[in-house]
Length: 162
Ligand SMILES: [Ca+2]
Ligand SMILES: [Ca+2]
Image (cartoon, rainbow, N blue to C red; front, side, top):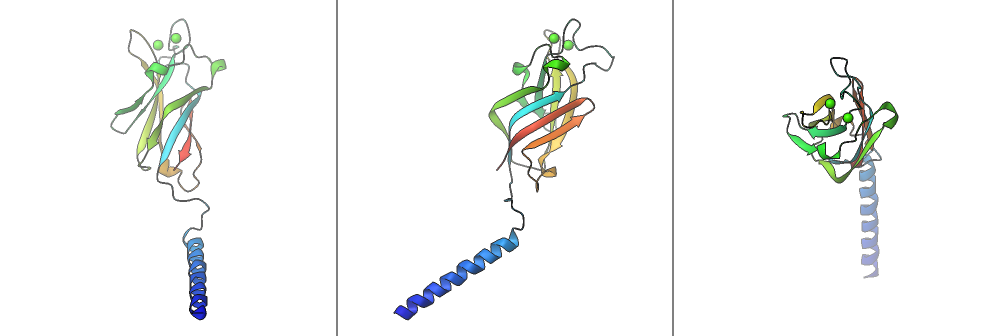
């Protein structure tokens, strides 16, 4: 009986040892394989202050800035128009939005667009600039801040992998 117990302990020790060895072999990276990302905040660090006609976005004061997140089919997945910052100038940058509900990306290979607008009323809002991103471009190193840009627009996307 004692011998059997010793044998069992020996077997389990070997099992633990081999499974550890196997683990370190199959996951050489220190990171797990994340399949999702949730955006917790968006920071706009620079914007174009002139439109395509070299005019300012508003006649008498600065643009009133917000962003949307859209998919490749222009479906708006997050509409930020009710959270615009008024009369932005170079000195009031950067603009930071903390998302009350994180924006979850469950397909890392999908491309998303962050489109930045000048809020106008009653005139339609003006599209200032947009930039796109795809989280699969960052898997492997898994940064929690992703910087994207297009022309004079620069945006930091901040969030967590899970
Ligand atoms: Ca305007
Ligand atoms: Ca304005």
